Amino acid sequence: MATFLVRLRDLWQRLTGTVVGEPTPGTGAPPATPVDHAALTTATVDEVRTWINDHDDGRFEQSALLSDLTRRDADLFGALQQRLLPMGGHPLLVDPPEGDDSTHAAEGAAAIRRDFRRVVTVAAQNDLLSDAVLLGFAVAQLVWRWDEASGKLLPALLPWPAASVEYRRWERRWYVHTRDQGPVPITPGDGQWVLFAPRSVRAPHLWGVLRCTAEWYLRASYAAADASRHAEVHGIPVWKAMLPSGARQTPDGKAFARSIRTMGRNAVVPCPRGADEASSYDVELIEAKTDAYRIFEFLLTAGGGRMRLAILGQDLTSQNNRVGTNASSETGADVTATIIQADAAALSLALTEQVARPWARYLGVPAPLVRIDAEPEEDRKAEADAMIAAADAATRWQALGVAVDVEALARRARVPILAGGARPPPPPGAP
Image 1 (cartoon, rainbow, N blue to C red):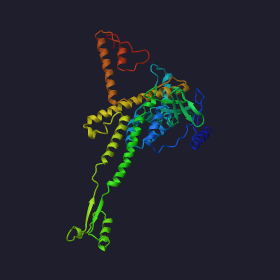
Image 2: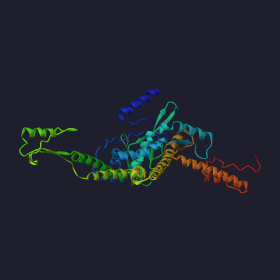
Image 3: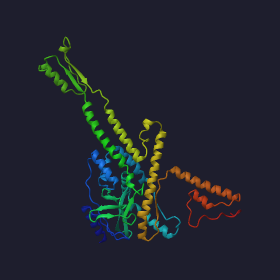
Image 4: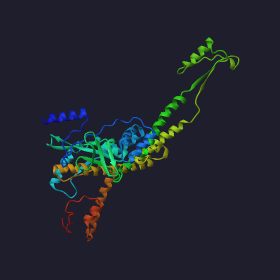
């Protein structure tokens, strides 16, 4: 019976677009359904500037739709993939809280770890990151539904469309616009709402790269269209047919014009010669002699470079063929990797505080720590070497009779320490 009701619920949601779920544990709030918005397909410079001004003022309906439109640009889309997709490939760890080595904490972390990727899918994670990069913030709703396998409620993180989000500066509060409940104020971490604002507390929406890329998207779009028209006008040469005076309406003249008009590849056109040029047939290929196309190259290159700079923090990896050696590409890749690590740290904190904590509260277990491990392999090796060096140094100093604060040294070397601190060193001569 329960399975039938679940299927009926899912069918109703697909047919009506209504978000269906159980009341939120702890608050009893019902799940909300976002307002629908038609996709944006065109934009003008004046409209874009107005929408960015609205965005700065906390009204995101048009800027959010514009962010979707800008992903039509290949340079922006490629840079966005370089920023987002590595995150889905990094290990996601769910560990007991620091300092709690109890069985209860370990079992709670294991239960959440087992289902975490069902709750926060990689696709949902990409939606959060995409909005956070382009708009500076992302909102999601935790929808609680009955899970037959565990016999408990299980949350599902559903990204909320940013076009249905508003930030009221005079209240310093975020609202979502719903189809069934009107404007609803949100409280991040209450078990229903997740606000991912990785760059700022005061005004995270001012960190959205859309503010500095939207006009460049339009310039690149216009430049590509103008370049195509320029190619149509100037890229197709014209055959200039020269006939003797008065021969245009003669049978020979008409046949000559037809041969030029139907000329194909590797064609041969007979050109009878008279006593002089005025009495001779001839052809000449007229091509446009202009370098006006370079302005389109400049606009497309400049637009793509600025989009990559805003999203990746650098453009060296794309311009290595112009700026020199592989060292420049490695420098650029390091910059982007650092930004991705910052994204991973911010998202780890948001998932810990706003997803894992209310979930653990419902399960009655200590809140675990969620961490996306985006640290490069060479950094982990260096960290392990530092731990070994610290332990070796402590052992040598103790052998010389120096009282070493082993726990402080271990913490400095980033060694995880269990509750109760480090064990005291064995007495000299002990096995």
